[in-house]
Length: 142
Image 1 (cartoon, rainbow, N blue to C red):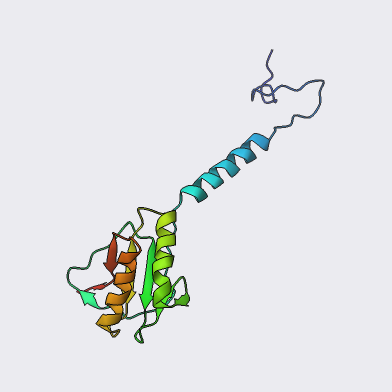
Image 2 (cartoon, rainbow, N blue to C red):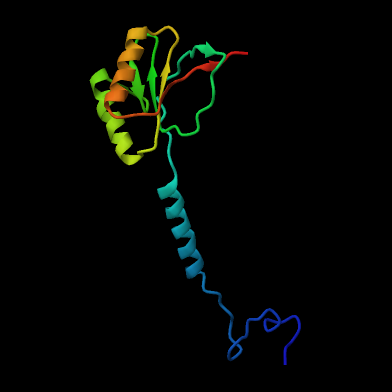
């Protein structure tokens, strides 16, 4: 016989009149498994860490598959993850990034006042590292 309003009505039966406990360990385990799954499958964008004045273009479009951003300042200094890097180190950093994320792309976020030679040198380093999906960042002209 079921009692209404008691624990038996909720589908939980008491033994010997003791307290009813719900084991939360399987739920906590499942939460940790989901957390690990999302951390492993998430793709993180590596920002340049420097603020630049982007040139504007009428044909600028948004890129979805971006993984690494190389910033170039007005003076021609290159930045990755907020750290200033020498031109010779860019190739190695891009290669290491591509090992972790083979489908990732590289965006060169160059200040509009930086020299074209510096932009081409950074672009060349990214291509020598094996990056196939390379773009130059630009603002949308209105």
